[in-house]
Image (cartoon, rainbow, N blue to C red; front, top):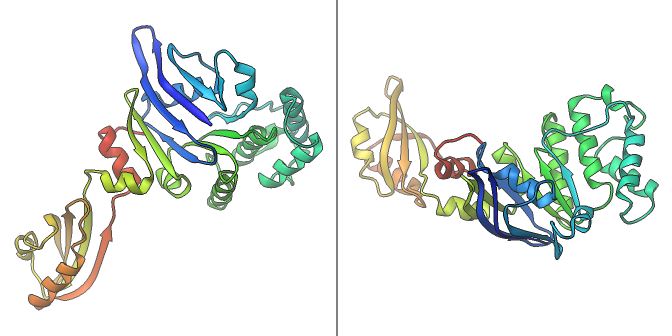
Length: 313
């Protein structure tokens, strides 16, 4: 559905995007991530036709975004991070205006508007001026304008900004539902949200693709370490040296006495290993009462920080 081939963008001598290439098939929800200044927003703007590339090519459903701009834009619904809305208009008038401007989409105007109003939960505010709406409802209006012409591609930049936890769950479910039929590019600072929603993640760093794969595959291939939290009774801090001899344990990163003979340990484990069974045997062999053992798996956030050296999203 979207093909990006050796795409570059220069601002003067500064290279914001450096010959990146990847494809997005129909019906995929792609998480597009990167630190501030990595080239993420510039890439999205080139895909939508807002910015021309310096070199390379973007095609949308077979159409070139430069030579067939209107064809590509008609196939994209775009929700930018700072949602541009006409605050003096009420919701229903604004959506009707967007449909008229788009001049396309399946079904009648009223049918399309009713559908997105229901999907985005705008039924109670359709006759209110946009200026009267909360930030969360404004975000919903922005999402509705991106969907109202029924495009095959949705590009959503921070779609859950300003929403409460219940609304976030609803919008996340809506994005998953839309992903069954549409191609969705989701940009978000909330990495657990990306992990829960997206089937594939592309991470861009310093203008280049740093990683591309499913969240599960990226976690598995990451050099980041998992950890295990261990709490035992009848122990002492001297156990730290012994724990490093347990297969799979790399080092003890923290240890402290909680209460009398109850001791906590935090262990770094080698990537891909799960030493919990060996740790249980260790406790039995050393006459320790195991009170708690919890494994913390590598998260998408850990992978992101490892690839971008701790820079912010």
